[in-house]
Amino acid sequence: MIDQLIDKIRETGNPSVVGLDPTPAMIPEYLKRQMYRQYGQTPEAVAAIFTAFNRLVIEQIWDLIPAVKPQIAMYEQYGIPGLTSYMETIRYAKSKGLIVIGDIKRGDIGSTAAAYASHIGGVEIEGVRHDLWKEDAITVNPYFGTDGIQPFVAACKGRGIFVLIRSSNPGSAELQELETGGEAMYLKVADLVAEWGKDLIGQHGYSEVGAVVGATWPEQGSALRERLPNT
Image 1 (cartoon, rainbow, N blue to C red):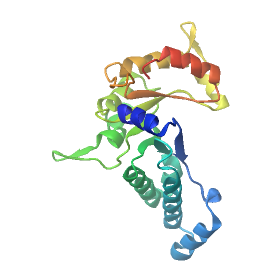
Image 2 (image 1 turned 90 degrees about the horizontal axis):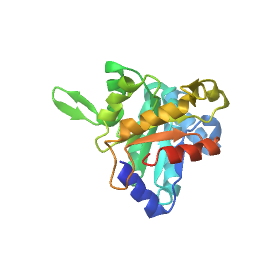
Image 3 (image 1 turned 30 degrees about the vertical axis):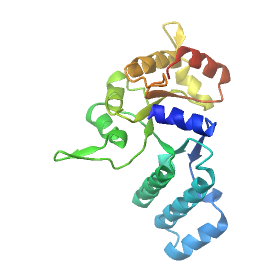
C-alpha cells in the first residue's frame, strides 16, 4: 500500500487526503429532499444521501488527490444501511484509482484484534478468504500495546495501518503528554511504531506501519518526522 500511496502523491503532486465524514447537515438540500421522498426519514435515506454525496465529491477530486479517508463512525451510527454506504463509498473511490484509508481507529487484544484486522486482512470461511471491506489501510489505536497491534501488522500484506500517536484534540495531552522515563508518552508510542514497522519498509523507504499525528501540534509533528524517518 505505502508504495502505491507514495506513487499517487508524486503523480498528483499533492499529499492531501480528503476526509469523507458526511453529516446530514452538510448535504445539499436538493439531495436530501430527493432521498427523503424516496425512503422517508429513515437510516436508508441517510445512507443513500451519503453515498450519492460522496460520489459527487469523488467525481470532482479523484484526479487531484492520492487518497480519501472515510470515517466509519459517521456511517455506522445508521446501522447496516450506513455500513453499506461506507462500503459502497470505498468501492467507488477505488474504482476511480484512489487509495482508501479507513478511519476506524480500532484496537483490542487477541481474537478481537484479529477480527478488527479483517478490515485489511480479510476473513476466512472454510479455507476461502474474503476481502469484504477493501480498505487499502486503516487507522488503529495503539494503547493495548504490542500484542494488540500485532494482528494488524500481520495483516499488512499489501495493505497498511496508521497508528495513532498524537491526536489533534486539546484533551489528548492528558494522556499523550504524560511523562514516562523522562519523555512524553506519545514519543514512546512513536518508538513502538518504528519498531512495529521496521520489517515492512517499501521500495520508497517508508513503512506500511504509518503514524497519525494531529496538525494542531506543528512543532511536535516536525520532531516526530525526524524521529520516524521511515514512517
